[in-house]
Image (cartoon, rainbow, N blue to C red; front, side):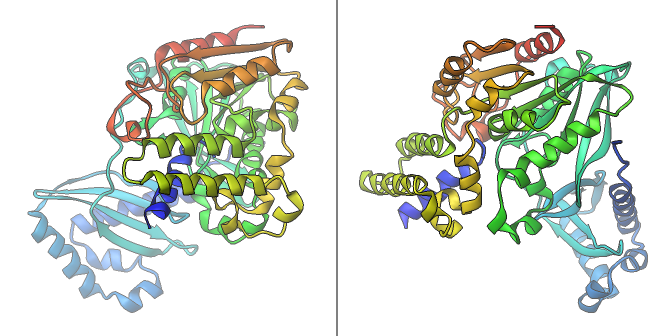
Length: 451
């Protein structure tokens, strides 16, 4: 059992690494307004008004009297209502929900609301809030008057992803950066522990006259739908389709200079940035933050080796067996004919054969060599997830390519935040930090340069 728990931890930690006109958010705005009404009705004890918003299915198992007693009991146990926050949208098991912080004298709760396709309230829950991200906006982004954030959506076929367009207030044909996440169901800020890499970047760029678009990852918003078609899952569905849709959408925004569109990928997004750039003629350049040059499975092994070495709960024998099993799964990927017939649960990371076969046939350095757009590769010296060895491989592969630049920050970790001491997963939740202003300045300088 110890070995299984260690494998689970490694898989979880690995997810930190990687793996047209903008339309208005009518549905999101409607749900937001409805959530505001629910909160207002509850605090005013207008329980009949709340109950009238419930779907028939909810009403079958939850009476008006139940609602009244439930809220009254929370008020009694909490010691009386002090204040409440404003509803914020989030995702739970791939479903849009609206969370509102309710502050009582003795305790704070989250009111969680969900609306169905008929705009009725189909989910209602009061619970203790999840652990809060201990994050603060960076000092260099304090001049909020210099930019504005516009809620919108990135639309790709039937997928509609909440997004934020960050614009300098005086934007007139400004450059724009489209941000592409690493692996896992990331939010638009690319929140990981106490860090929000993409939010830092967006605010820092805007304060320097550069716009950006960041969006919720498809696997975060439509996790259930994607899981239903896992047999055909590839990075196309996970990353590239939505990135290309986002690039196309920003190209027609009035305030944007369509000749200065940049794509900034982080980790898995960086690995795929050359592939994305090869599929569109709208990009002027790509920025690759913590990009691996080796095949993904090699990076997985190096990460697991590092993480097992840090593990003080497993025995040396358990570590050895776990790594041997990992190496066996990696070697399996060399036999593509066999991989095609294997189940996802038997393959590395539990990803389906379609996913691995797609990546096995992708060689990022070779694709990057053929691009005509400008390239910038950025690496942190304390990144244990995509190590400086990958940076050196990129330098070697692209040493003769024109319009290519490299930036190395010795003290930055995988999330582009300064790291103190030996890099470890716990730093993401035990320490605070922001993307350094110096990195933002160098990005701004490169974006605005002509080379």
